[in-house]
Amino acid sequence: MASSCKYISVHPDNPQPRMLEQVVEILKKGGVIAYPTESGYALGCLLDIKDGADRIRQIRRLDDKHELTLMCRDLSNLSEYAKVGNTQFRYLKNHLPGPYTFLLPASREVPKRLQAPKRKTIGLRVTPNVVTNALLSYFDKPLLTATLIQPGESSPMTDGWTIQEEYGHCLDAVLDGGFSGFEPTTIIDFTEEEPVLVRQGQGEFFA
Image (cartoon, rainbow, N blue to C red; front, top):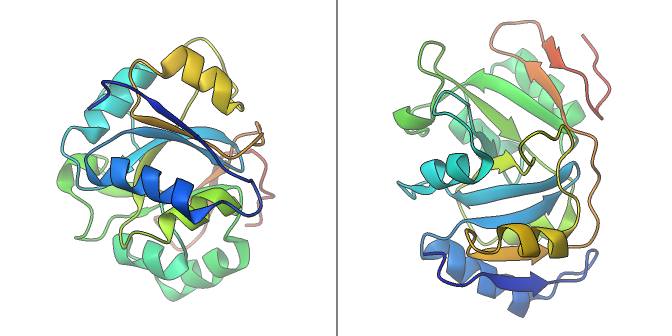
């Protein structure tokens, strides 16, 4: 896709369905979009778009070893794509939705091309962002995603219009849901029984 990028602005607290439906159609046709989260804007496409991961990596200038994340609409959706034991489930239930990325063993639902090769893990998120949750409600599957950080920067982009100006040539849509936070998520490795802090971000870490 990416012949022309649609700029679609919605109300941050009450996103208009007719605007969201335009984004849904673009995603269904294999599009890659920028969308708001609680920790900056992110790039996303539907999970089963074969070249989606390549396009996201290209835009972000990431190599193919960089793991992408699944943005899930809720905990039950997350549980389809990760092997979640009782300990993990209780912990996740207390922390999600929230500014966390959890590394968990991937379930069979996750295509092999998206799993960390040796560990067979996947990163998963459930955002409290209203706009993104409204968008996810149109789909059974999560969005394959990566935070939109420009080369040489450490903080994600937070403004939809700036993204349109700088990345419009390689995106299919920018979903502008207003200003998003810029502090990154806290990354927690939960592949074993105990949670291990990988990166401290917005979310408070409890062992």
